Image (cartoon, rainbow, N blue to C red; front, side):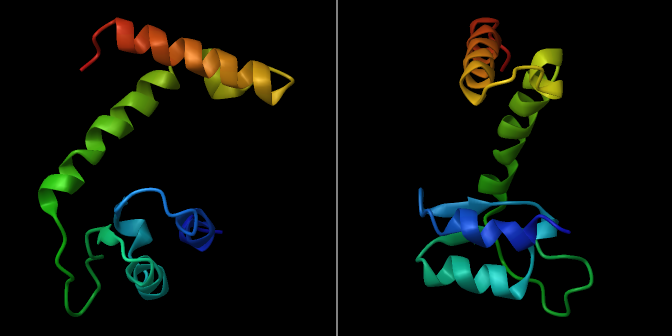
Length: 107
């Protein structure tokens, strides 16, 4: 099952003014839902789309910062494999790992 099938439920939370995603989220139904919520879809068109949609390329490039952060977060084995039994202890270690990454000046 693709991620775009679950994305609509997350978008309904309406936090922010834009949705930034990769080409996998370029589905007409998802784009229409984002527009109905008065949000901007910053999603490049798939190569097989007959008429490519316009999107904010500068905002899309900033998505890379988030992707790199999650890549560094997954370097912590305990985060990537989720050894913790409770959600609270897992969240605590994710917060600690994020603080360590931020303190290292990773940008």
